[in-house]
Structure formats: C-alpha cells, structure tokens
Length: 118
Image (tube, rainbow, N blue to C red; front, side, top):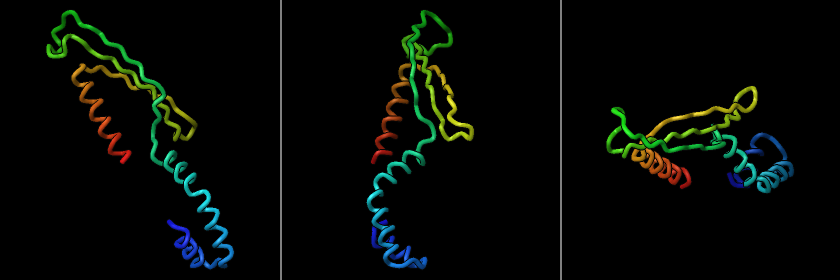
C-alpha cells in the first residue's frame, strides 16, 4: 500500500488529516522492516537446524536396487518449529535414499526454491 492510499483509508475511518499523515510517515519509514518481519514470521513453518548424512555401501543384498550401485544414503534433518504454543519444538526426520533418488530430490527442491524466490 502506498502512502496516499493509507492516508485516504485512515481518513475514511474518521481521523484528522494531521494524524493520518503522521501515521503514514511512520508506516513509510518502517515499511521495509515490517515486510521482512512479516515474511519471516508468516511464511516459515519450520527452520532447518542441521543436516547429517552418511553413505552406506552394501556389499550384497536382495533388497537394494542394483542400479544404485549398492549404496544407500542416510539423511537426518533436525527442524525447529517455533510456532508451537509452548515454545520451540525440535523434531527429526530421517530417511534412506538411493543416490539417483537423492539427485532427483535435490533437483526438485532447487527448482522449488528458485520458484519461491521469483
């Protein structure tokens, strides 16, 4: 919202012009800070705290996909959810993935990040 629109909206609520101009000036001065703070608080559900991973090379197994080269990647994500009622809550997500599937996951997450940034 630009300054003129804000002044008109606040005047329609019945405040005098001097007060609306003072409010609009404060809003204009703090607008970018307000946007950053709202984006930080509104759009973030979880914050990534840490990522741990390791590669396990499987010598022989009937359950490992032969196209993976006998490797499995173990990934552990630690998340901080600060929007819980009783303060921050840490949670952990752990999963195993083949190198090919990890490449697809990284590619898709990178594409999603680019879309969100644009």
